[in-house]
Image 1 (cartoon, rainbow, N blue to C red):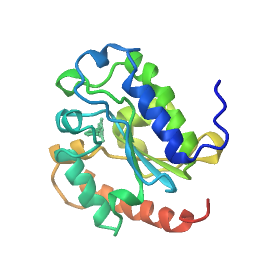
Image 2 (image 1 turned 30 degrees about the vertical axis):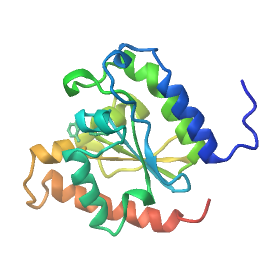
Image 3 (image 1 turned 120 degrees about the horizontal axis):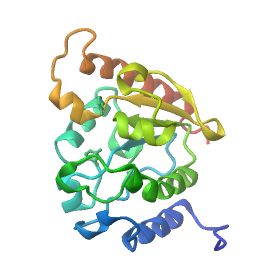
Length: 202
Ligand code: URA
Ligand code: URA
């Protein structure tokens, strides 16, 4: 292991980025135009984790900038949060062809990058957006539809908070009471409450 003591969070994240850029561990590297490492605040108490880059993300190198990302922005804005108040990343850093779900081998190959990002930021809460992020972090025994809005204690006391993926909400646009969107607007209020509680408490 190289000695990383004394580096700033920005420098450490830059090291992760360079390692992702040179990664050829799984076949997803073959088709990528850009890696999508993540963006946002490195001093935030809350990280959002999605599944993997889509077409727009692969084109731009930025997470959640397509249709799902625009909805994520609106969900954040509804409670007064901006993208840059939190950190946004994904389970895999390269786009799976045709936006298929990354295979478990691809997820395993990439997971150490996410774990490094979590170590650098040291958040209080990880919002797992959708089934892939939930299962990558907590294991395959959990169903997003059953556990969204619940808090799970993870390593080092970090809370995992599962929410529906914005792409799922695009396919389920009803806002009726009890609908996925309605539940998501309940969940994001709890995210804001946790953000306010933990912000600045390092
Ligand atoms: N969907 C995801 O899971 N991540 C992105 O970055 C964009 C869409
Ligand atoms: N299935 C998913 O994969 N994600 C959701 O958010 C909901 C159902």
